[in-house]
Image (cartoon, rainbow, N blue to C red; front, side):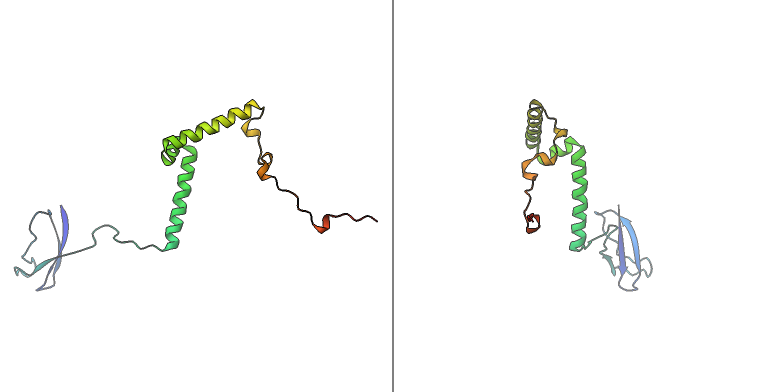
Length: 136
């Protein structure tokens, strides 16, 4: 059953009435008793209606949701597999396992490798004029 708001155009009396969607709306005003002057009003309902957000609010909300998804994906393997797809997840898992086996075969464990061991992270020293030693 739905609650509807009504207005009598004659006496301007407003009231709520509960009845089913398939039932005919009332035509008789309970206040003045005139028949045929009642209109059912359109209301926003009990929900929040249209909510307008600014770009900054949307961006902040997306950042929060993204962070939550990343945190859950890091701890829940099934959730991560659903995000990236079963086949991609298993391919990534196999690649990681293969690399782990390769590292063990050469005598290193994955936890023993530091970012400084990777050549792409080693930065060459840039020589400046201050680095030169002058002979006296």
